[in-house]
Image (cartoon, rainbow, N blue to C red):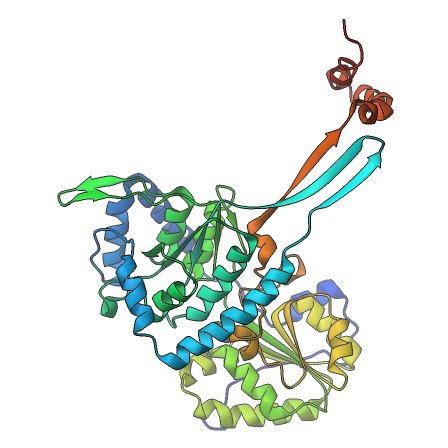
Length: 451
Ligand code: HSO
Ligand code: ZN
């Protein structure tokens, strides 16, 4: 094999009948690396930014981004200038992406519901947006203007009044975030943008930065937010975990993943192309093929050998496909393949089988499902209307991708009349006595025994 053939390991589960817990243990997954030392470093950043505000941000920008800055707020003129300078094709593409994402997000806004459990009794679930959000858009190995769309659109559809964006300062853009990021913000009508990268952006949003002065004058405050969302590297993910509880977060998104459930009817060239497409993000990205067809597995390997050699980010892709987090899982049947996919709980799951739609309907765990040959993950990354900020590393078993409800709270409103309360007064007395909390019952009685 040429040097462009990835190791792409095989996990052969044929002839075994593994349960969910066993499957979870054998699916290809990144084993946790240097978590403790990263956490120490990020704790240092949290403490420093909280204690020293803008001075800490300026020092971190020099250290991590090689950029001098007095204040990280991006001037309004730079945001509109970026939009004016934007390539027309990219502008048209971002507009199409925004339009589809907006239509889907608008349809997601949940209705308030009210029930009347008795006479003069009502309870309502009222959906209310959070007041202010901080959206983080990475700018390291790659820049992601598409992630500006994916974060901003559902927040706007939810009705969030105040939206701030942060992205790392770029040395070759005068210490501003990447121009395409600024242009995407402008297209979406976002004017509060900060050139802050990594963990420090998350801390600045979570705690806010108080106004300050320096020799040149006033440094206006960064107001704290209620919710921080957006993908990022391990420093960003760790910072989000550390500030969770002070603010809400979406999810601790890790390196991206694609799983493909395919049978002998699948096209090996498409399977290989899609595995490579997500491996391109990160040497730690996971690309997993689950199939009941050893012939297909062989032909996909062949295709990988050809296509990896031709792809631009060959080194990253090779490393990702050769890692412990990638490979092919061989199973006895489609049935068994579905069980493996549910155990893996992929961020992105493609179904390339005969009757793909029916198979997709049986999947329980995935961040997003892509049905058939014409729904590749790349479509969802940019232009499907769906969101690309999705749960990774198995967390799809209990959490959801970014959506409108990420930015909403459900407030329960209780509205009973005298008649409504009197109908259940004796039940409240019984339960308050049973819990030995008689003052609870007394509070109800006080309403009926006026003295
Ligand atoms: N696949 C990534 C999102 C992305 N892809 C942005 C290209 N640009 C995580 O879902
Ligand atoms: Zn992608």
